[in-house]
Image (cartoon, rainbow, N blue to C red; front, side):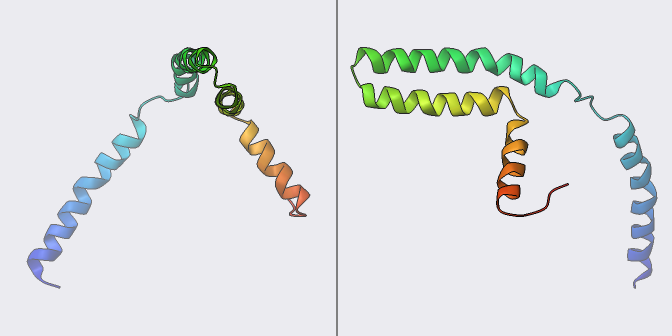
Length: 101
């Protein structure tokens, strides 16, 4: 290896280690981030669903209204109960005969 490249590699390794350690210690606290996002986007989701559903009702598109409501209920369940995805995945795996822990 070239002497100049070797010294640059060692210098970079010596300076990056404290930066990486400092970043892991002083990282942002994301403990309540999911709850905050759910509290912020939850009402917004409900307002948008309500407006679109009222639009479909006033234009008398009952089939599209029913499709939209079914889709909105599915998205709402996934959004408001995020653990349901794991429960469904485990249930499907067990039904297929895969052992889960």
